[in-house]
Picture: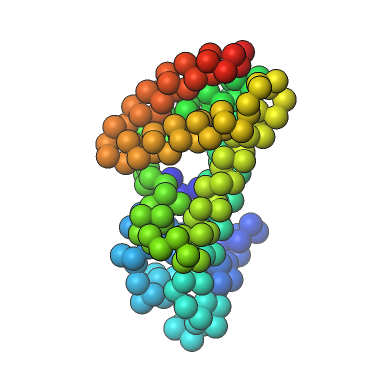
Length: 200
């Protein structure tokens, strides 16, 4: 899912060179991974000069870190958080809405998996800035789940947030291997989990 990438500004005028680079990299990294996309391809498809590219992003790593920040904003907040708000009212409904949103996402023709999870596998060195940035963005997703539980009255919201987050990541990995009903399967498990925590 493109999550609102655009090479034009909000007023319809052409985006800045920096924004064109980010939007181009966003699409390419989301679809192809981090290592498979070279700087030359990003420069070519964004239509900027090489000197302009390196003025904004001295190294590919700098662009990847920006991409991960943008991905976190667009995926976690602009899309997932908005879907939770749209689909659910009570804490239980809002948590289950995550998996309803996943089901729709997994069945889209442009489903491209999760760039944050993929980054962890592509950059395995836990000390590397890219790995650490992906971990921070995934932690932001768990914090979103924890926020849903803030007013739920459950006795151990921290533990439940971790469990739901694990279910979310597992569903995404399963969908990536073409189990497109993984969202609904995970939802069934989530219902059992919420019953166990007596979340009504």
